[in-house]
Length: 298
Image (tube, rainbow, N blue to C red; front, side, top):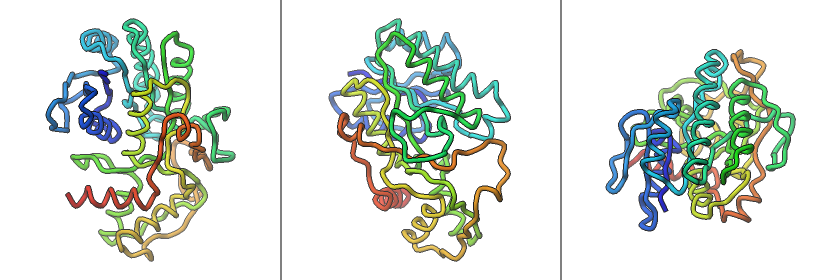
């Protein structure tokens, strides 16, 4: 099976390309706007800007993948709020280009979405929950889902939550790396205790994408960790695992922060459908930290 990955230089993209490259029975086609960060044998690479309709048509027509996994997106929530046109182009228009190209060559599309399509009034949530985004980022991701669902092609949407992990070039930060670095530098940090998520190890999300691709599974799947945690829980668990000073972690709540984009208070996912239909089995948060620690060491 030929699997094309968009956004191959992102955290999820790197993990996914790495994973598929280890599977002899599948061929990975990595795509990204700039040169590939990973240097692995057997990877076919094509430069691809998914906001260019011509690029999308050219690359997909040339490579004819069996499955396309779209991990590319503008994910900086506050930036999406202030740069709405760029956000829409990256998260919505580009998806319509991918959908049209996939329909044309009869390719299964797997699109990665987010818990930010929900308003956060309660959680954890299953796949049937009604979306109601609070931010422009959430609105753009929901609109992309609608485009995928209304298409005539074979598709799957994988929703995820608060992804953490380590990239090869250490170019991407996330809550775990931010906490670790801040405490190692002796900095005090304020962390909220009134938001709930099910943090997702990047390797687990990549495996969820891979399982969906190999089964050509259709429909919506929640792919995340299984533990409901606040950012404060995450920070304290990270400090404890890496034996850092927990007294530098200060509890606060979201009313103390002024951010351009609203965040949902409580999301987190119920992942029973993915476990049952895909064989998805995420790491515990502590196991995720151990894997991350090993990768940093290497």
